[in-house]
Length: 185
Length: 185
DNA sequence: TAATTGTTTCTGTTTTTACAGAATTAACAG
DNA sequence: CTGTTAATTCTGTAAAAACAGAAACAATTA
Image (cartoon, rainbow over all chains, first blue to last red; front, side, top):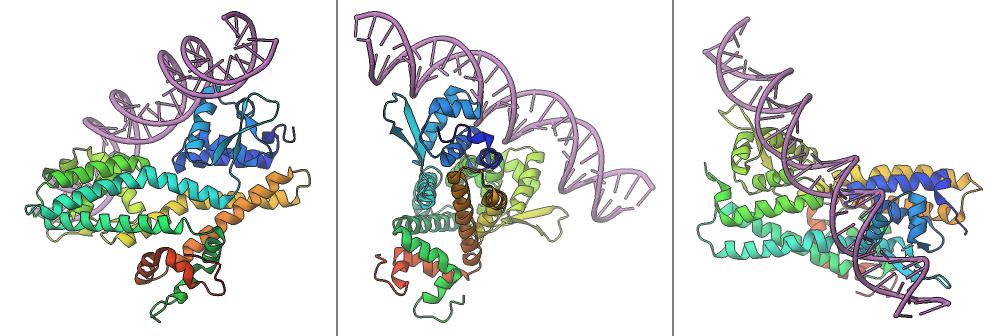
């Protein structure tokens, strides 16, 4: 047991509590975020029981939380030699983590809206009686979100080193665009 | 009154109801999102009363909602000639909308975490007794989020046409990076 | 300054969400 | 098979959030 009780260390504790608190603003409940924080800081796979003990949550809660985190694919089950129980580990590659969370949130929070907008925009295009600004604004919203979604799907598949390079470039990426001095950095 | 009751049009209604529903997943309550949707579709500034009538919400709710939307800077108060009441309009430029929402969410949901991580990382660097993986992971998390934040602040100030160009490039932006065939599109 | 109209804040209720503990189901070992 | 332990699902309760209506507050104009 290399980290008997992570919560004993004041900074680890501060991290876990803060993460839990912010989780409520990030669209997951405190328990889910705390479980994630604990696993992120752990140097070994943890069984559900240990999570229960360390965070003082109900067993059922931890179970639900782990399922949710696996839904985001930032936590996975692993088997530990000589122990029957499931163990869990968190993704520690932060790029991977970001990509997986954003992919799942897009799926849950954006895609359904794009689908609806597509439908509405199509109907509005044929509906002569529709208020013109309604037609125009729904259509523009659809195009905008669809464009962003397409962009995202492309960029998310770029190799990690490329993403890092782009990130480091920051605003300087604008200077690389050919055919126009009009892009100031 | 060019749009007497936007809710009478089935597609406008569907948009507003869906927006309200999704709002609850996007971190604002249904009322706030519905008010926003209504204003976005309206071709003229609306006074709070009209919003109350059309959406069937309590006056107090609409007031709170408008304040929240002004907090995101995607709705603003305007004065209408010959009417004493405040009127409200939504931002219709979708790039502007995205930028303002993301700026505010970063301020609320990301910046406080970066601040805490900075503090923890600094303390952990000096704390010889800290579990090494805790020190390392908190530090990496801090660097990662700080890098993303810096990138965001730079990109968000790029002129809109530049952003549009970059968006349209999609994954092809990787080809512009100098000094490396290693970036495949 | 009093009356009117509009806006915000406050208070209690309803609805929703998070959660603990119990019950159930599943997996395994003897 | 059967006893045992782990894991999930179910159910009731507690906590939090959203909301309506009333009250308080502000601004405007007669």
